[in-house]
Amino acid sequence: MTGAGGFIGHHLVTALKREGWWVRGADIKRPEYGPSRADEFVLLDLRLQENCLRAAEGMDEVYALAADMGGMGFISSHHARILHDNSLINLNTLEAARVGGARRYLFASSACVYPEYRQERPDVMPLKEDDAYPAQPQDAYGWEKLIAERLCRHYREDYGLETRVVRFHNIFGPQGTWDGGREKAPAALCRKVAFAKLTGDPVVEIWGDGEQTRSFCYVDDCVEGIYKLMRSDYTEPLNLGQDRMVSINELADIIARIAGVAVFKKHVPGPQGVRGRNSDNSRLRQVLGWEPRVSLEEGLALTYAWVEEQVRSRLRAGSAREAVPA
Ligand code: NAD
Image (cartoon, rainbow, N blue to C red; front, side):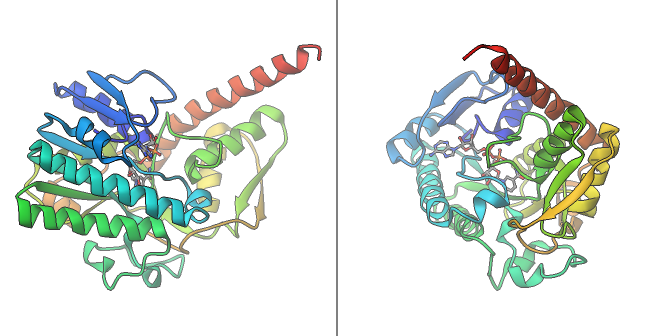
């Protein structure tokens, strides 16, 4: 599995081990918030072909999750790097899987492939898989995902590699990036609310007017869906997300309720991505006979508790540092 040191990859390794698989994890870094349960973990820069060959060698199945990515702040300001690095990662990983004789390959795509013109209002129609064309993703990140999806299709048609393509819609949960610039809205808001609670400063900054909408899917549902899709016969891209759409303001309010703190939402300029986005899960239900089950409130309660713990340790470390004489 590539990206095994990342948020979803780390959870997926744990799930695959529970199912009894032998797992080799590959990533440029180890998981940040706990040891990997992978049987073997190789530190490799997967932009390089020889490293991808090493990662895929002897593997029956490849889960391709590695990507240079982050939340809107990162994605909207690193177009060249994202398109360059992720193209290399995906071209080389897919070819290495073919050369290594893998039978199945799952590619982690994204709702970011959907065209900007279908996501211009907060109350958008949920996105169906076929809506991806005519193509006009907002960012380089989405364009690259779309090309990698097509590459998977051609490798299946031309070389018989059984490829699966999953389009995630905003996955969140514990042990994901929560600070540093790559974090996404749920983790960032959990952090801001936790700081508000623990420091007594009620101001929580929200990028834009906060009326932009999204749906959010808990990571346990995500890894279950990935596994079911890999085991299925379905070869076309498939949405994997929740279909309950909320605004970023609502998301902040839910998190504040969970934290038990009153916050003041301050709207500041910042990247917002598309105005509205939701997943149409008709095909997901039809293909897998399943859909995500963990409610937004349940998932956020688990995520908030974990992020609050991180913030608490950070604040403790900060006050310990301040206590040391210069
Ligand atoms: P993540 O950033 O936590 O994980 C990605 C991993 O890829 C990281 O551990 C990173 O170190 C690794 N990576 C980056 N460059 C590498 C390189 N050159 N060589 C080796 N490893 C490298 O992100 P995630 O949230 O776990 O996402 C996993 C996959 O799902 C990604 O492909 C992402 O684009 C896709 N996705 C995620 C979401 C989401 O909401 N989290 C939504 C849509 C799509």
